[in-house]
Image (cartoon, rainbow, N blue to C red; front, side, top):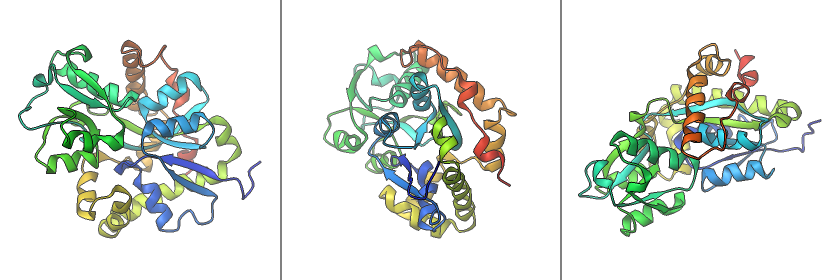
Length: 299
């Protein structure tokens, strides 16, 4: 049974779509719950921490949740935090104007399912494969430095690094607008945590939607609070929100209950694609992955 001293450790890396958790905390919405937000430098480390039992909850992309579910079938996606609509991108140095001209070039990619997925899907658009480029493995914290130093010709990255590199004069050669609905972020929770720490989880998700409401009502103040962790100005943070879609409660309820099968179909297609690209050993049973129990009871 849960006791007040049992913390619900929630892990996330820096990404605009996760900031509502930090806004909720900043506004005091979690003060009465044993919720502990834990920062990680990359999604890879968030996923590893959940796998190792160092976290109870992880904010992850759907493909990372599928990778977890392959070996941990009790993982549940209980909240859709956002859908990328331009926030994930491939940024190239001056002189490289198109995806096709990446052939033979060095491309920095984080060694995650998401990084592999984005570069694979992008190259497919122009008839190229991973064999046509030189992949350079880079952690998220290395993206900006490696690009500035000329260690790579392009990098698969996301906000806020995307905007920082574009401001330096780099070129946008691909972004998630070209694969709409395919990059989805979710909150991943093991079944046992759902059963044993339900009260804190309810508080976490309720606080998320309260923070989302606050963001809509007072975007300027919300941006001031949210931009700090992102390391950008409030104006830049608001601009980054234009590159993602944050589903409201009704959309979460429809998609996670499968009443609207759109997310279910995306998850199936993603699972199959990941098997084809050797990112999964076998397809994941996605019906049980999507779980609406936390959003179902909210008004």
